[in-house]
Image (cartoon, rainbow, N blue to C red; front, side, top):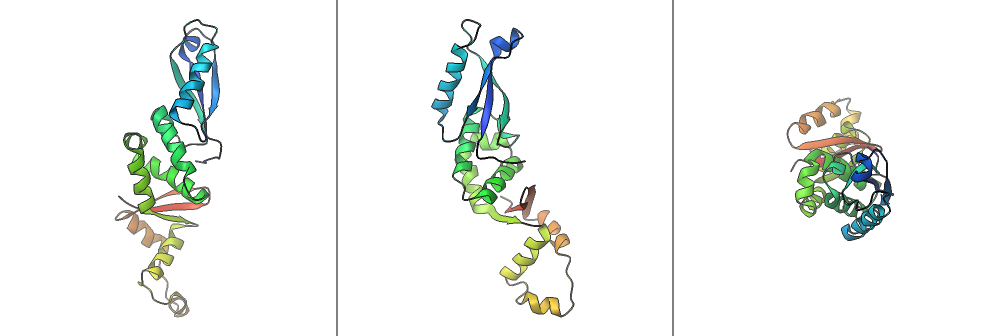
Length: 185
């Protein structure tokens, strides 16, 4: 999944669609409120060749996670707003993966809570699960001097260690820059 700086949706008139026509508009979501998006949808419906067109549906999306697109317009706008508030690309990609992990319906019910849970649980993006496990072991004092440990010729399967942690307290997802990792909530 790739998150772009230009999230948008394609909204189509259902009256036109049912009549065998494609009438719709790509709507840029960046920085827009739900009211502003609804205004753009209404403008699109007014230009329909079918008089009185009023029903619409999201037919496509760009720059957002696949699951959130199915959760409805309010959830999509909340998701895009939350993405814009993330610190950097690693946080944005991690957040998108996290929403996929917890489920878009859960996010749709409580976007502020899910965003806060993510901020509390997110550990970062690492090149691999093994890199995370080795660094974490050193950070929390499981191994006080990683260089001395490595010099002694001892070998730990860090990938296997991290995989064991995944079944217990850790969750992860592949993202473009590596592996996004967070504590299970």
